[in-house]
Image (cartoon, rainbow, N blue to C red; front, side, top):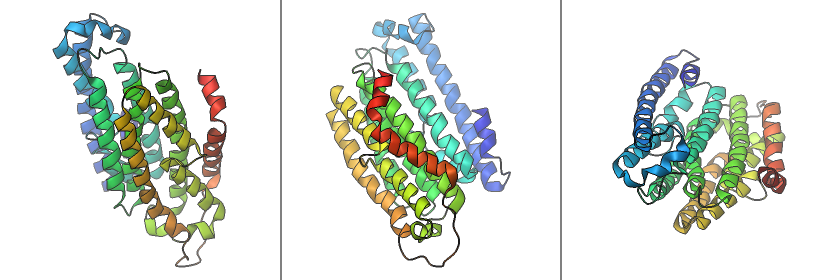
Length: 322
C-alpha cells in the first residue's frame, strides 16, 4: 500500500499530491479498521487460521464486527461501493501507467483476499453472502451509471473498475458453495487484467480526453481494433475472455442460489455497452484533423492477443485450474 500511495504522487503536481493524500489517509484508516475487525475474529475463534472461523457458530457479535472490518478494508482496496470514493481522483491524479497498476493489482489481490477470508465463516451466525451480494449489485449499478457521464477516459475506466469489482463479488458470494466460484474468479481476473491494462496502454499513447479519440480507429486501425477488443471484452461479448469470465461468474451465482444477482449482473452488462459505446463511436467518426496518432504500442497488442487467446482457449485454462 505504501508503494501505491507514493506512485500516485509520482508527478509531484497539485492534483497528484491531493489524490495521493486522499488515497493514503482513507487507505490507512480502512486498513486499521480491517486489522481491528480481524482481532475480533481471531480472538473469538482462538486461532489466527482463517480455516478456524467455523468455530464462530456461537459468537454472533465478533463475527459481525470482524466481517464489517474486513469488508471496509478489502472493499476499499478493491474499490467496492460504498468504499470506492478514492478511486476516480486517485486514477485521474496518478500517471496513466500507475492508474493502470492500481486498477488491477490491488483490486485482484483484495478480491481473492476477501474470498479467502469469508469462505469458512458460518452462514448460520451471519448472512455474509447476502451482504456481499448487495454490495455487488450496488457496485455494478453505481459504477456503470457514473461512467455514463464521464468525458475523461481515465475517470471512465475508474468507474468501470468499480463496476467490475461488483462482477468479481459474484464469485465471492458463491465461494464455498460451488467449485465453479474459484474457477470463475481466476478466469475473470486474468481477463480483467489483460483488458484493463490494454485499455490503459492506449490511453497512455493517445490521451485522457474523450475528444482525443475522435477518428482514432480510422487514423490508427490496429490501435482502434485493440480498443474495440478491450471494451467489448469488458462488456462481455463472445468469444472474448471477458464473456467467459462473466459467464462463469453468472453460473457460480446461480449455483450458489443467487439467481437474482446474476440477473442484475446481466442487466448491468447491457448497461455497460452504452458506457463503452460512448468511447468507441467517436473512434470511427470522421477525425477533426488528420494528425499522427499512436497505435497503442506493443503492450496493447499483446494484451489484445491475450484477451482473444484467453477467450478461445478458456477450456485449456479451466483444465489447468482443475
